Image (tube, rainbow, N blue to C red; front, side):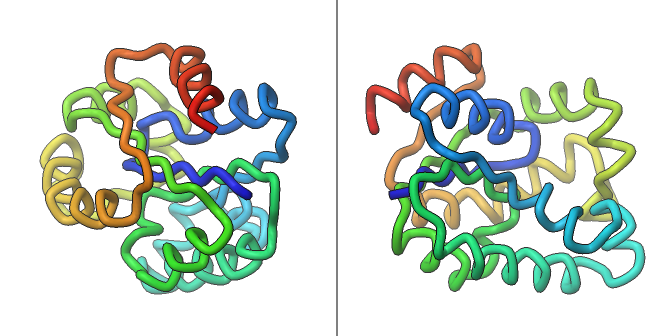
Length: 169
């Protein structure tokens, strides 16, 4: 059985996923890292060259492979829920955990991380806090319907989240 972390960019899926995997003796995989490795380019470059459809196709191919994994913590990209088939594959052998935080908290985290802004594109023409608010409106119902568990992590240290999830597992 896998543990799949979903949620918007900046919520802490990768940080929490690595720590949780270590605590529970599980493997760890970040879907965005796999996409970058396989494509040989940054997410920003993938978007620049083929747009979001190309990125989502690459993401679906990674999910197809991860569906065969077991005993793995998977940090899924923020938009993985946009394709129902992705979630169905992840649910087949995984418990889905939606990590949540308000848009302002996400924006503060994203804007404080220079690596994120350099390697990830805006997904709308507005960018910034407005983009996060707009995309959360679209994605929140999808996250909610996919999730077995939802956890607001805005005021939690990653170690607290890991303890909670390890106890839940």
